[in-house]
Length: 134
Image (cartoon, rainbow, N blue to C red; front, side, top):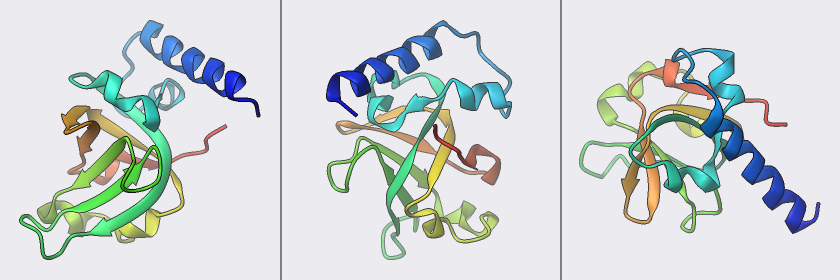
């Protein structure tokens, strides 16, 4: 696919997402209006659904709060989006979140700025969905 076509498709997806009314938290409509992971930093400060392939998943068991990170929107460490699962919420996820590496997922929540990247803190499995990305 040509770069211009990919850029046009990305702009169309984001434009459609901005024009669509807010959908209930777990509806299919929300996933259909998802923000591509590489565009997530542009939506910092807003609630939304960010979708993409998990390029790398890491359980930081020796870090404060023992978080699990799902890196999306490019190859780690140059990714643009992170889904962070706090250590105290990790037991709620079956199978373990790092098994999502290489899979397409959608993350639902408040998009926050984390350095030059975007991040959603995921405390419930209902805010993390396997996705079929077209």
